[in-house]
Image (cartoon, rainbow, N blue to C red; front, side):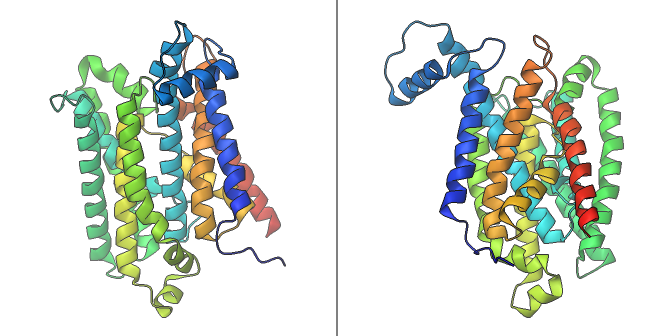
Amino acid sequence: MKIRPESFRFHEYVLFATVTLVTLILCICIGSVNIPVKETIRVIWRAISGLSMAESKAVPILLSVRLPRVLCVGLVGASLSLCGGAMQGLLKNPLADGSTLGVSSGAALGAVVAIAFGLTIPAFPFAGTMTMAMLFAFVSLTVILALAYRLDASLATHTIILIGITYSMFVSSIMTLVITFAGEKVKHITFWMMGSLQGSSYANALVLLSALLLFGGVILRHSRELNAFAIGEDNARAIGVNVKRVRLIVLICVSALIGVCVSIGGTIGFIGLVTPHMVRMIVGPNHRRLLPATMMGGATFLMLADLVARVLLNPLELPIGVVTSFIGSIMFISIFYSSRKVK
């Protein structure tokens, strides 16, 4: 059997990066108005270089609408996929992702409360929703870990998952209650809960990039420890891994990253669940290679899903969460069936 190298190989970086870049350009070009690739690249290059723009209808479409949106979609996809891959390794469970903890539900509740009651921060229109989402994500993590510790001081994986699922159901009931009193904002909240990055800005992209660099960087630094978790917590302890410390660090980073993504893009399912499975078939289970590839794979998957959401029923636009759930559920069943068949 061929043994895969531990580090991520250069040609794999090039392959995944090329596919991601081509998808990015494709998604910027295609929409209600299709713009040639050559003109798209020229406009973006002149904008980056600070050169003057020629009078063209393509300029505002590309620079004010599509580019910030596609950037946000790619960053959300990369972040959620990274969280899913980290959680699957940490909890040693192929069904795990960030939402398994209940953190996604908690973040969504915070964002819904902010939208329903109009909580904002002066001069930062989206900061109120983001702050509430991150706050509720951290509170959710604290509550879940506290309950898990009360039941099992070792913070066993199955205990965390069980409490996370129960907490998600509890939060869902509260969210329904909040929506009941949301009045005329119900339609906006409902569309947001399905997942949508319509109207994303460069400020949103900057926040997502900052969160990914900060929290995602910490997760990537713990790739070796996640490899140890994947073969069992007892084995991880035996080779000197501080199990509780690493688990808490990864969980906190995952919750923060999910909080930021949910506050900007709403609830988008199956990205963190399916993408790591697909990428694992290509690069193997080693997290030093899996996590970087998963980020690029998740960005590509979500950008393509957003493209489908924009053009499938043009001029109507589907919520991106509907597309990811439809495609993701089919792919996950296929992957699960194939893995069982191999066994």
